[in-house]
Length: 229
Image (cartoon, rainbow, N blue to C red):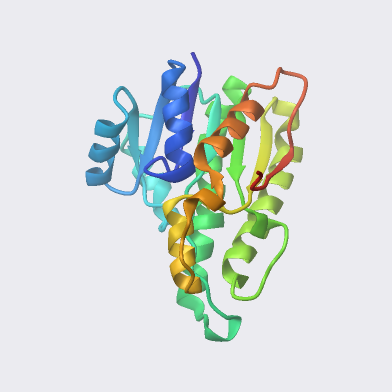
């Protein structure tokens, strides 16, 4: 039975991954931004553990974890949570840049750092749910794409640094996926939202589990997922 730490389990891809792993009988630690959200996740995912830490304030994660019981071993750390705000570079000030980079890049880096001892002990796996925006940057997507390009750089550097410790690192780059975040993006774009046009969250979850289940001795480094017919 494996132990997984998951961010973003409250909806979308994160929820689909959490449900799939719970059905397998694995042990889950779900990160929540506050105690109230932790209670909601515990009710939704019966049997799962929760950890409290706000990804919007990565500098406080270390303090938060000092007051909680962490798993002794972590077989996988799944970075699924993220934030998005669309807008032109000329309209984005430091507050929006800092908020985007904190949640999408700095927090994953800090969370990984804090759990590296447990990941090394288990010869575990770190999965960064990135985006197609982590491979290309389109107009109005500058801040989000910058954070996701940085996330790919983080994954690539971590992979090289931790290979000797048996830690595998995967970046998954989904295209547009039918999630609440995608619905928000459509509102920002002024477009109607039809979830049937986009990748089901469960399909991305299956992709993530496929990477996790790959036999030792092989590693999926980068994986793109696109909508299909």
